[in-house]
Image (cartoon, rainbow, N blue to C red; front, side, top):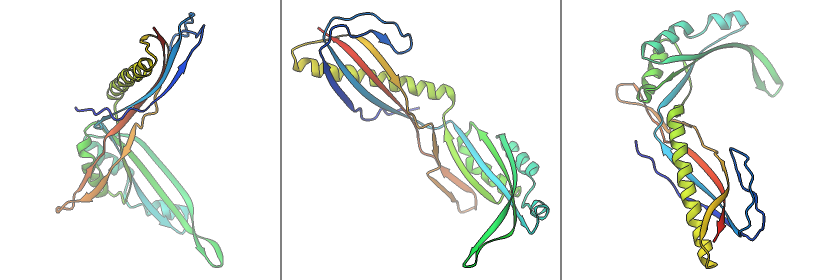
Length: 236
């Protein structure tokens, strides 16, 4: 699996201070520092191919009454669930709702009946079968594909975040060294470190189309994980 650290943007501030606190973000430990410091902010982004896919489909029915809408559902949720499970997916959610349906006209808003929606959500670690799951659900009676989203397993996401943090720290020190060299100084130990992450754990399918045989093909994009660090180094 290939990851591609992307561009790093750093914001630098040179500080001269006596008594900058030593406070590592996770421990809250405080110790005095009497040296001049340089503070750096840096970001890093890592991409991973998704290893989780979630398919959401629904059967829909309409009628003049709520009961009629329910009876007119295009497919049975149990049949859709079985079809998805037969393809190796795990059904994680099944939701049913009936609501009034309205029509807008020049005279105003008028209720024209009811709509029943039975939504089924399934997850798989085999992302290549997302299109197969859609086809299986449609064949079983689903008439609405509400979405396909891709994400990372916890293990993969954590691995990507660690790489992003490492890259961000490396670039933070590089930027700090450039600033320190401009002042004929060198960079010492880090005296404060703060981290944050604002990853984008989910992406949607970039394309969805049927091939010549009428089957659905989906090409997912990569999932990105971002990390930011704010580091203060002693100057020597």
